[in-house]
Length: 160
Image (cartoon, rainbow, N blue to C red):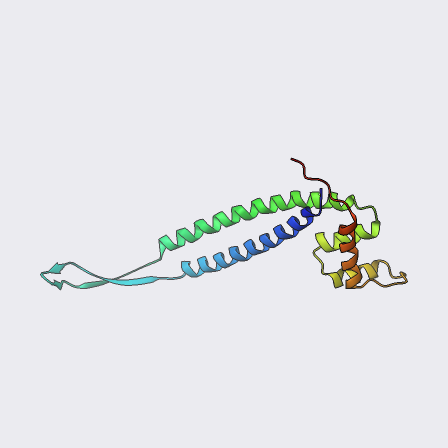
């Protein structure tokens, strides 16, 4: 297991956020379409070149609504699949973090990768957890600790 699992985890979380945003947009569009009434006028036959009359017809855009509903259902199914994959990936990320020897780094990694906190927020959390620490945590030293960990830890070879 290597750091690529952490990258994939972060990417999948962003993909899920994007998919949720798209689903919400589809739901709003569907509710707008369901309340919409379409009108048109058609001629009622012809006598020679002259129409016999025109009639106004009204209705809902059923084909557009059904296509949008189909797309929405596909996106909802995809979201469910991705959330299931994310759960499995979360377990793998947690297992990877557990392999880190230093407790301090494990806490930092959990806050940064699993809780999705920024460097300054991780530093704040670490300062709250370790208030008696002589040198306070900063966003820069949190970032450096993570970078140094990846520079100094040999990665597992790919299994083929």
